[in-house]
Length: 380
Ligand SMILES: Nc1ncnc2c1ncn2[C@@H]1O[C@H](COP(=O)(O)OP(=O)(O)O)[C@@H](O)[C@H]1O
Ligand SMILES: Cc1ncc(C[n+]2csc(CCOP(=O)(O)OP(=O)(O)O)c2C)c(N)n1
Ligand SMILES: [Mg+2]
Image 1: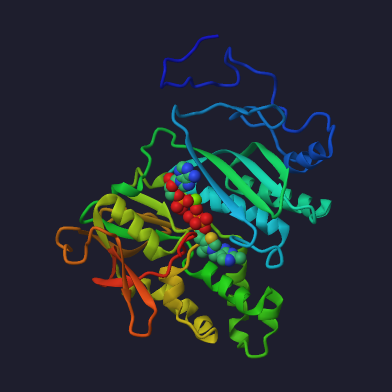
Image 2: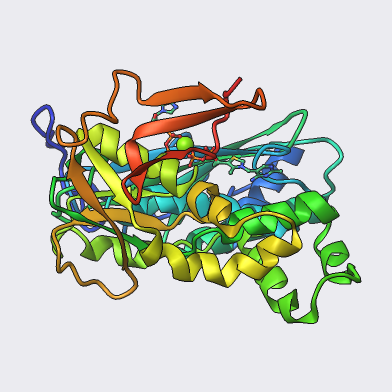
């Protein structure tokens, strides 16, 4: 067998001398109860050129069109990312796929393959496990991923950790640190919908209870259904990602923690300031305005602070024209914004009413600091 020089991986085609036994795709002979559950996750897998050895052995063996692989993992934890009484098991599986597909798209990469580690609580029945497995398989397939392995364990709550591998097909990766002064800021995908859906479920505790509320205006029922379903399963514009590098994009990330917080991450990584323009975001805020006032809040909090729609945020020179992307702001020089930049990106001020507001110096809204509301798992 020939070997590649260190740091260089061979481009293996299934028909090469490296040929391996054909793709297995399922546990051959279930021996334990765990094997039978694994079969739920691998049912329906089909052979793929990328997968030389699939699920069923100690590891998968993959063929890569590009000598580099793009890899990421995201874990979804019951009670933190989803609740079983707020969505179906199939939706939870689909959500895990979408959330992970977003990270590969956020590098400008295309789908390659995935492994899934799932911790299943004892109170979940076989039908529920099958529904979860079906959702995960369908979700991964819809974004173009081949599921090639994983792990199952029993545990105290449902957790799904998916590791995704992407492919750049010769393109440069699009990094958070690539934004340049003079770039414009563009966005594709949904904005605020997932946060609106979450707010409805927090208030009413189930999709049906929200729809049954007698004070809900009939004109909002369609929107209520839409935003709850987008909280349950985000719709990631992943198919746009592979075009961005060639179209001239400089920096890219997916919005999971909120537009202002994730915008600040791009700006801080690039050493620039991002200024978001409300007039360009107005159409997103208007769409959710009546629903927000029904819940006694402002849709701007969802637009600027809500995460989990997993839209794509990118910076590119003016004139960047990819259908699906909307201009929402601009990239400014950090030095001309020196008055706003401090050594600590998060600056917290005490308000008169004893609450506090945190401003990120790298992210402005219409030239002004914005009090951040995005998600932070470990905020005290
Ligand atoms: N336990 C960990 N070990 C090493 N790197 C990690 C760990 N957790 C997160 N990271 C890295 O930190 C960065 C930020 O993580 P995160 O905020 O979860 O990104 P994203 O929003 O894209 O999922 C990513 O590059 C991620 O790979
Ligand atoms: C039951 C429930 N409560 C609260 C939330 C809101 N929430 C949980 S995690 C999160 C941020 C995104 O998750 P994270 O693990 O940070 O994703 P990543 O940035 O790693 O992609 C948000 C907005 C939720 N999705 N479900
Ligand atoms: Mg993450």
